[in-house]
Image 1 (cartoon, rainbow, N blue to C red):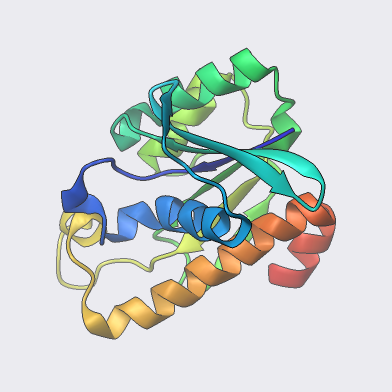
Image 2: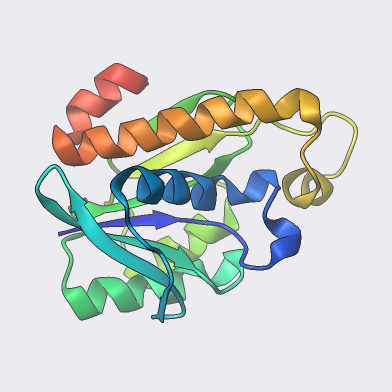
Length: 184
């Protein structure tokens, strides 16, 4: 069983922000495979289905970003999911918009949601798909990640979401090494 975790902020005010790329990718995958992410469980919204014969859970934590790990660890523990089958998807300011990076493991960097997940799982050894959002030019980091996305940036960010969804599916259908060779 795989667990796909899209990180984001739950309130509608944040739905069209750079910090919700993980939610956007989760929604894209769910839409493609007819998975309904509406079950309120484990401090999140959860859906289940299959991708290429593999049972999959998709989780969108409904805690705020910096507490995302609370939701993730509850699902992992309840379903006893191997950490190498927990795929966390989130935004990354160190990657250009429209670009993604896949890693098998590693530290959380500056991302508070990933810090929470790493702390809750007590491990850095799980796959992640980072969706590039670029860094702010003339505004604070907080304004940049949770502010509205200007029209001129939205197409590149959408490309990143599309690539991240495809990469996540490839990790499940093929394996992480093939996905890394294809997308990194």
